[in-house]
Length: 424
Image 1 (cartoon, helix red, strand yellow):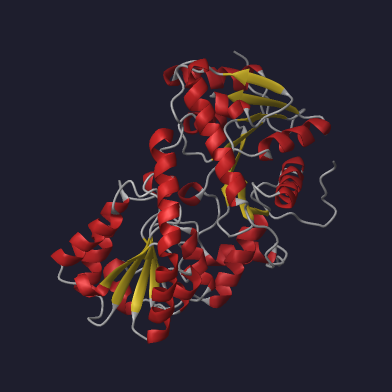
Image 2 (tube, rainbow, N blue to C red):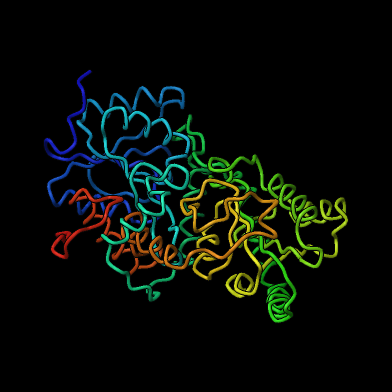
């Protein structure tokens, strides 16, 4: 077996693993090939084949156990210099990333953005707990000074119907034609398609019916002047819970937060749990919340929301508790105290409370606004690109920026100088 060439010493060769069910990776690959790169797409399942065109293609039909040896041999034999994938914590991706690092191969990870709504994460090596983004305030300020101030005007909105349709096509293809890849095991932690899809559709329909009541509750609570804290929930199977938190489930986080709130929060304070908008409700978190609240004698002070304006809720609240959610960044933008229970890229002294959850209810202070501004600027200039996966203009914007960063080897770093363009 020959060793892979040192990145930068010769022609670049990018391997693409699983990405969003979107043309994002395929268009990046086409643009890179036009600039003389080699690209190889590895299809792990039939769904992967739906969203790739052109270049070299390898269909992996081996077992998960043989995957590390297969991908390591491919890295070496094809002279791979770059690896691009959706989330470094997925099955198959974890092994590939570790082997790529051992060979000095550049790893680029993408997903929905830390910043919302029209940003995409595009950074080196890992996200959240695995991100290279600095956690030291001085380093963040120095990094921000090297980044231009972004135009924060909202440009794109992810197409919800297009996203749902693409996701359904991907998963139904795997369901119906899975026999073409007989050893494939789903790479994320989401429930099976036949369970998740109808449950999600039912929950979205049900949430639409209760939306007016939820919105009215938020308006009334925000206007009431009553002290309250917000705990936005995440998806139980999201890697922010599975990989970047100390919890094995959302219910463990609910238990911890309610117990701490009951013992240490001001007696006149209330706690609002807000369900994730894409939660399929396979578990009844509201019932779990109410059971814990009754146990601790605070049933009348804890509320569960299945909708409502999150900005309005956060803005009037005393503070926000999150495991590791983009709502945490929103809380910082709105100047509200924040407690992080997981491994968040924004868990930085001066931004989040460092005294622990029990003390948070009474001692937390708002974030340093100057450090918030520097963090947002540094994130936008290094770990984020402007665009969207499921919006035509947003997709083109994201591909342009991604290719520019890859060509100039500036993934996760500031792009110095306006002359660094991405040829088409």
